[in-house]
Image (cartoon, rainbow, N blue to C red; front, side):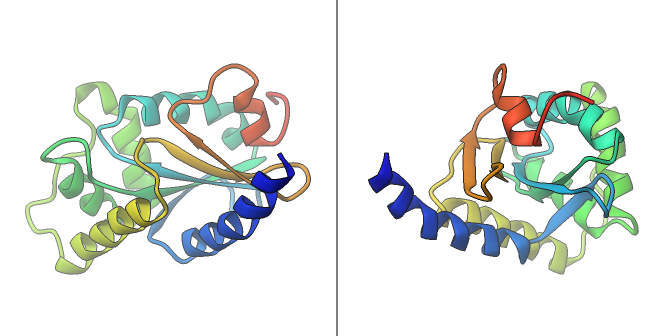
Length: 168
């Protein structure tokens, strides 16, 4: 355990810094005390499920999810992710995509700016370079400020640990 902490600590802190400067979409209050990064594919059913699970914390203003948009699961994943990033209000576009998830999510824009496609490619590369392979991959800080990583849908009490406490 101590060796793991020593090895993963600096790597995890570096990953956190890289995530801060990645291309993410804010989901929740700008004033939330808890920040959680999530590699999110717009077609990922487990990302959608985590979005649903997190609503009480996000809606209460306690947690801000920062969705690092990637496009890896399906042919239209990257175009959907780029459509969200290129929107006038990416947070609203992301919310629309999630609310309409069962109907296929957001409609791909006819004209996606090259810059938005490049941002998705950069996020895909970041995910790969950090050694993450699943969506969602969730990066959070625990009560001691240590960075934790969860690949895949959190189960049981993992949700509360990631989101900083009991359901509001």
